[in-house]
Length: 412
Ligand code: GTR
Image (cartoon, rainbow, N blue to C red; front, side, top):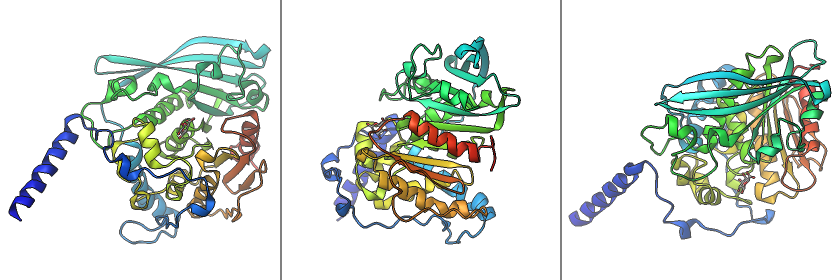
């Protein structure tokens, strides 16, 4: 008996030491235990109970916006920080903005282009985020803006406009009276599992542990640094800046909106697992899959929920609720089963009670809305577009229609 206790303690201690060595849990050695076939069959979604959105950790039920804002929201933010995305280190840094190019006649005179270098310096190293911004020349007052977190090749946000991509349809957005900005997420942190040596981790990380930020949190931090500039630009309405992202960029947009309440709206395009779809449904990509394929995206603690979704203290309806009461648009693509469109819609559906604490009466239909027919209710909106996983002009137009109503341009 005594021997077995000793063995247990020795084993636990060596595990702790192992974890403590580099602050990272080594790649799962328990893969076989959590690997389950990927499910695309609605009938095989297991029964699950979502953690209660409005019940505080002390059992108190939230009935008003003050309790939400003062008690429940901070609790959930902390849980997503420590268990999912990771904590930003408190290492001091300096930041400078340098306008490197201005073109008042961009897009054949329709827009002004500003290219800006945001340089972060810490621990004798620096890193530069290039922000591109077009503002409409016909505007007579500060305009609302969209900031895209670009997770695709830089040509998708070609600031010279030689290449035009529906992923960032700058001309169309300008024509609708909005400013449009973008940055390349790789400027903040390259999307690879390098032990957090490069990107902003290389500047700000000191001792890493199981709660240390992953790459998605780093990208969200980068979006906030871009916002630091955008709120100072006189052509933009500082309280009308939306953040938008696709897929891993959409997970990032949600986390940016949750952590930085200066973002006045979030457009979340097909974020899927670890973003907009309910993990407990285990439909399409699972926590196990995402942690295995992208071990650098989340904090190490998130791996505790590989194959153990029901033990996670949060689910993604709570991430969406962190955006309340600000406008939130969740979108899916019909063929993107890996991202679980139904799970995305349900997460939004179950986030609505947090929105309604603010006096609105949002009510989404029980069933999935028909393809290409956006549903807008109060400050939440949803569509499922026909076709594949992508961010297209069709999606943007739906986001702009919502923003027309909710982001202050033509407040209705
Ligand atoms: C996939 C990943 C998804 C999604 C996507 C993307 O491979 O499994 O969670 O983020 O990449 O970013 O395009």
